[in-house]
Length: 275
Ligand SMILES: Nc1ncnc2c1ncn2[C@@H]1O[C@H](COP(=O)(O)OP(=O)(O)O)[C@@H](O)[C@H]1O
Ligand SMILES: [Mg+2]
Image (cartoon, rainbow, N blue to C red; front, side, top):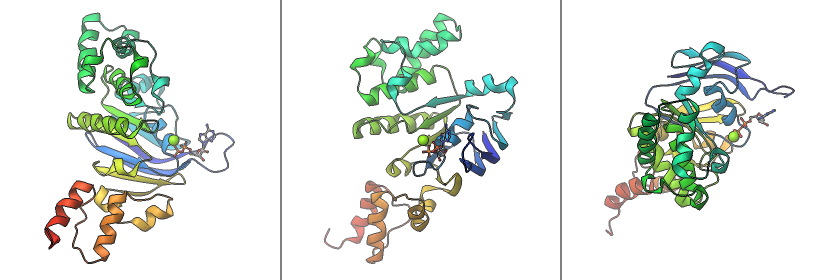
């Protein structure tokens, strides 16, 4: 669904490329997390998916359309919804349902169709009962879910989140992550850039970036076996994975699948003779 073919990107006047020779395929319905320290190229990568940036070398193809082809750029942007860090910058009106309707209204969509889309989008992010609320009364997590509802009302097939949870408190982050997982289960293809490793354990794949390159790309259980490479990329594996590895070195036979606290507890309890 998304294909990066030998993509290199250099910002004007930058000394080194922000992306170098990226080869990446994201299949329909996949949930891919992108992690990497500050400046590793995550946002630059995300902005290539909807043609906000175009490769200096190589090609990016979305649903079979090349982003460098101006004739299909609008088409690509209808397929790719983008959510960013600051929810306040993404909300444009004062009332929740007006905000969700804003995008479709701008496209001149029929009012009845807009009503249906707004209701569906609010239901999708679990915010139906807030339809007539003032946006400024919402928490950060709720605002971010409204921003995503606004994207959903445009009926994209791909959702790209660029550190959308970064400004949220732990509750807001959990709400947002749950919403994204629900959208994924409903069939949405997701590319989620995050600085929180804990958020990646439930994804289909993790892409680890360092200095504009993809250094690891695999299932969470595979990626978290390469703690050396993660540390080299200035990343710390989720605490639960570190605990698991420490327990393993003490002789507990825990599997690679144990990555969350729940999974860890499930495998550990039978091994503890005192329980
Ligand atoms: N508009 C820009 N002009 C020049 N260099 C930039 C610009 N935006 C980002 N960069 C540089 O490109 C590299 C990758 O940045 P970015 O994609 O924002 O990384 P990340 O999102 O992982 O923090 C960094 O070295 C950053 O300084
Ligand atoms: Mg960034």
